[in-house]
Amino acid sequence: MKRVFLIVLTFLMFYNITGQNNKAKLDTISKYDYWNYGMTFSVQVGVWIPLGNLKKTFNLNPSIGFKIGVPIAKNLRIEGGTIINVPLKSEVFEYFDKDKSFFTKSKNTVNGTLGVWLKHENIFNEKYFLDKYFGIGVGFIQTDEKKINSKNENDQWYGVESVNFNFGLEIRKIAFIKRSIGIFIEYNFTPYTIFKNVSNDFGNSSISTGLSYRF
Image 1 (cartoon, rainbow, N blue to C red):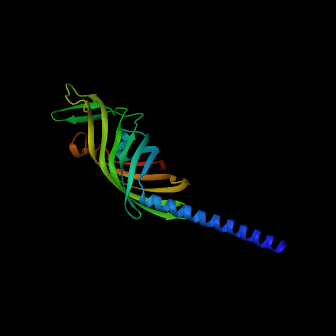
Image 2 (image 1 turned 60 degrees about the vertical axis):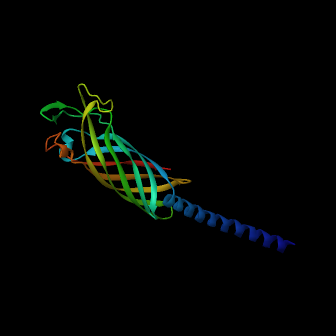
Image 3 (image 1 turned 180 degrees about the horizontal axis):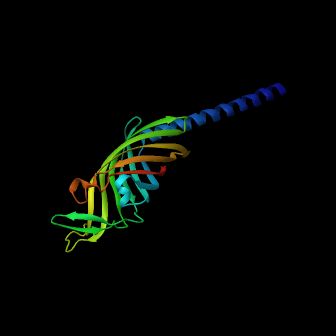
């Protein structure tokens, strides 16, 4: 009777250990499949750091971003969203509009980027991801100079718009079921002089870095 009991106990212990290992593997696989085949939402919080001549107008500013992603192939995802920078302080710069120019500052509300990103995701150590991405969109700066007699309610302020290119890296860790937290860094190139609203030495480069949460 004791032998039977020991055999049954040994079997149960072995089954329990094996089952836990298999469950851990299945959890990892299911999470990996989720990242590759499911829709995701991301929130980014960090800082926007101007480089070169852009530092003459802006200082380091807090930023927040929101993205929605969908898979287009294994390990490949496309995301769309917006990143908003909040300029705590802006120096005066000259703005050119048709046949006139004036000096203004950046309005402390919505500066940033609206765009799409193509992201390649690699998993390593089962619960970590290394993401490489490239994005293109519209970069914008809203000034504190209001337009006179503007008929468009959504276009009440003078602004600077340009195409924005950026690429970056993100390291994420699976923290909860089908969720991850990470850190990112990206380089932005935004030629603000493209529409001749600012001087040629205004600046065009910046870095964004911070934390991300994806679910």
